[in-house]
Length: 497
Image (tube, rainbow, N blue to C red; front, side):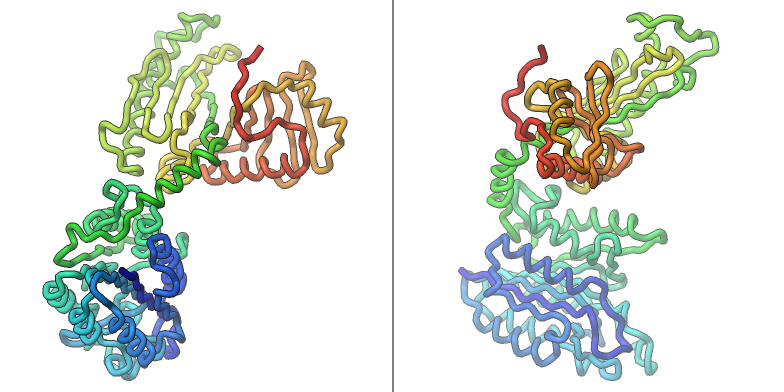
């Protein structure tokens, strides 16, 4: 069995009257790279981008690939550019398509369909990210063209039982791109799925026709709404006789390899803790009543009193976070275990990490309470860098903390740093040497060391990715400058004396 891919993208047209297609080139390249994970080596990929994708070259080279197909082979056909129909026939534009002769200078899909239908290839998948929205109304010809017609696609797919087709939008809609993602939105999620970066697109580690389409139907509108302030409609479309059980990619080997690498190299990430502490007036809690008085001392009684005043607020936070986690990660009910608020604390246990929130009376300012929110017990380090985690927790935390693998004598560390006279590093500490702060040129945030932890603290809540990047940068700088800190590689942790 051989795997072939035909990947065509036209971002820029030779005719200035035809609009560019944003990010088509990048979409094609990254889709090609994603297919390499699944045995589509570059030697078996026909890649035609911009001036390589002329009408003559496309028709000639595509025909040659199809003629090579044998029983048991697999072919994936991807196109990004302007597509249109005239009458009942569908066309894909080329780099040399002319505004004055659209159908005469574009590639008709009908001959390609016929040749594929006659081939011995067992599985063919089309991925079409195209619409006619970039065709300008020049020379009075605009009205005779329309989006790709689904009827011709369905007719071919009904006859070719071994084919399935995915399209970025329905025939009366347009396909949109995202400046933030630097991709066509639909293609971005296709690539994400083939890379194994979209768990919700998989069925037991496998990407099938139905699992991919179900994922696209949910994610494309969601991303579209984030990318544009005005409402747009884009409905991913799929058709094919074998769509229900059409295996597109088996991600299990890729995911297993990642798990093995994670178990060897991601221990540091697993030890991280996201954190924020914020103060709030005791009287502003929803459970405070006018008849209450601010405590005049700190004790278990006053601590529980404050927790009772904030129990509804704490429940509101847990409920809101629970809903966000379900929507972002697609968790089922049984995936999440929530401990009901009690004594001023609550926790949500997920398959990947734990989220906790607590409310504590401030012993130094009895008219205040301190809210502490954390994410810890990270069981799947790759999940804290994914888009879903960011969707839930961006702008929530201001601190990233790492539990040191061994107990650190702060006074000995301070002495060693001062003796080393390390350039680009400033150290400050309290007189009792219970902690110290490091300022390293190039590091973002304040680095604080205690006997058992290292933390990077920002002056306001930040995106989770920025917190991680600042930690990674600090880690590299510490190693680069030879700061006499114990290894970042976790070893057996020693208990504090």
